[in-house]
Length: 441
Image 1 (cartoon, rainbow, N blue to C red):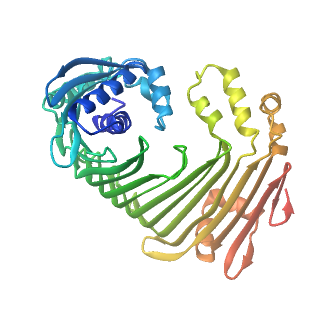
Image 2: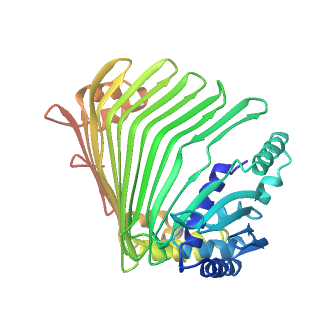
Image 3: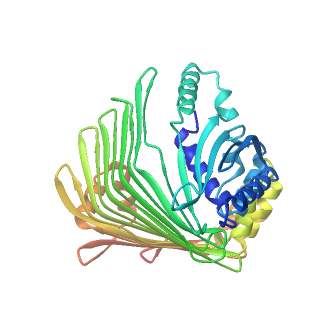
């Protein structure tokens, strides 16, 4: 069972937002014409539309995932970041839609969206447990347990909605309980594109007894389109708490996780940055307790050829020639990747607290990189790579690391520089030459 109902719902939300966010809202008939146009577009792009029933102020239809190749191309053109392999898993999926026109003072168009038929990939399994899970999901579908409600305002300039709360228990070899509560979303539409989306999720929980429990509490996320391309955007999410409990004697607790990303496109080249901050990570494993506080991780990438990168996502994995050609195009733009800051302020082991570390690193691939030459001689890649890394470790943490047998020999061969009570490493790899703290290796 590779795809859950929750994953299906996520895709449906994205699809619904893109498919129905356009057109006039003056009268019901105009709305019906617009919906009809959108359904026609879907049919031309790999979807089927069946069982359509049209009434005065409402209608019903079923959308099916028929042609993964066309669907992938269409969703990509609408800004969704999907690939054909993922869409292939949804082939045969059927989504029921109940539409109402001018349903209330806010809504020009209201939609209830729910799965009515499972993908072929889920139905083909012969495993007993999978068959039992499929039977349970079919019962959930019959009860419309997996349902998304979506409202578009009368100017079709905004939308809001929610996912129906879920509390389901699956009985197999182990009892598994899945809970989703308080999933709501809203956003703005501008020039027939989703301009902004905000989401909240109060609780997401999976309880498989002693084997595994996971709980995510109070998630909020946002996305804003800041330019003409889907990659001209900024987004972020925060989670108050993530709890994982498993055997043997393993648990993890993450508090106040925040992730923010910004990307922009110029001349088909993407520049992107991601910043991740966490107040605390606590790990218990084999009766040992570790804790890290004030964790920061920054990552940046520049000069990524987005046209070639998107094309690469749709290439047959067996088409080596096409893969090499697109990879060469991507690499020939001179990609740079960097970690400006990866740091942990405090680290504790079984109650003993010490200062942590900071790390910064960069990797640049020269435009001269030749993938064909590298395939003949892998060492040819070395002259096209430039990497610089700086590491600063507290004396206490360095002492702890040096006690590990695997690290002991390396640290003896590569002694650090001491500065301000820190152990420092400056590592550079330029034109095939590696140096550590100025010493050539």
